[in-house]
Image (cartoon, rainbow, N blue to C red; front, side, top):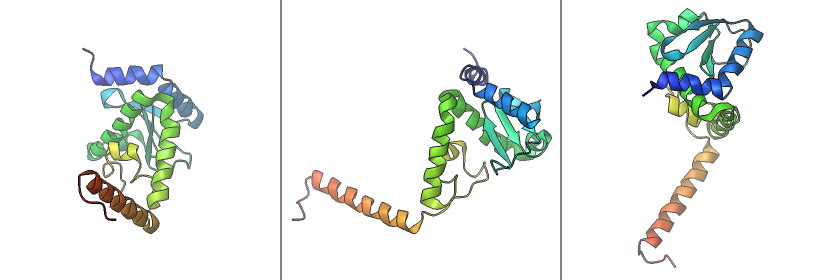
Length: 165
């Protein structure tokens, strides 16, 4: 049975996301260095967007710092976080881009931060990616509280409890 890194790498090539990463590498003149598990690190990314120190496209992790910075054993958790994004690209392909954007927008709407309520960042490990948990915005907390109370009330009625009327 093939190992997961090989399958993941093959899928990102087939779905076009690694090809997109190589185009981005060429356009931004970043240098690729082979990392562990079939992942490549593109060091010296110079564009302002995104503002994070690292981001992933296909099997390539881009960093604004030299590639060796991310490959240092002190940043093993961060590289593992980015490698989990590689797996997300393997499964979702090019659909990752709009889905990630929607998850970021939802997170920002609910908390004011792009990562903490983003499913993809949560799945990759928030703390490992440098994200911190943020509280819900006051309006979102109130809405969630109202929804929770309504759901709780409805489940009590279905369970045979007498109706409040």
